[in-house]
Length: 229
Ligand SMILES: N[C@@H](CCC(=O)N[C@@H](CS)C(=O)NCC(=O)O)C(=O)O
Image (cartoon, rainbow, N blue to C red; front, side, top):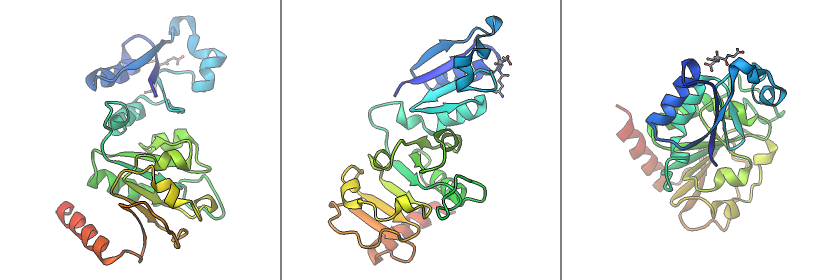
């Protein structure tokens, strides 16, 4: 979906994001907000940013309001809008601290470590994020592309991480969801909530802590050894 930027003159904080878009040669729809006419305080704009400030980036339902975060988003998620081949994509489902009892609280969530590792090992990969409770804007602030559903998070992903134990992530139709994944693909189930998966499409694997088959263990060891100095 098209990037949309709400901005004022190409100075100050608006300039910061405009420069980033220009540098990356990203096409975007420009919404000029006339600060001298106080358009930043109009109700329709305040719905986007209650702080009444520009710049604001809107993309795929995500509303991002801080210029630094916007630039990080453009940098990290650039694979989603630079070309027809987005390259390697990962997806993280269930990003909150825990899934039972269900919460949208991110504090203490191991998703920070997971994202850190993904960025280290796959610097060019995009990461889609979905959580039944965590708002898309919070997911975008973590540098993930907010997915609107479990289905869309699976689509095109090479690796899908079921990170917390929210009940919605239990008993997923992985054989069907896996059909939309890139090949080879892996669904890594941190909580083992999808143990008895049958009928997987060729090239799609399911693994979880303690369940890696020897061939995948060897492959994982090679990846780790080639990345850890
Ligand atoms: N922390 C914000 C600051 C944004 C900011 O200060 N924007 C100014 C324009 S450069 C603004 O919208 N001012 C209008 C107002 O405060 O009424 C960011 O970096 O995005």
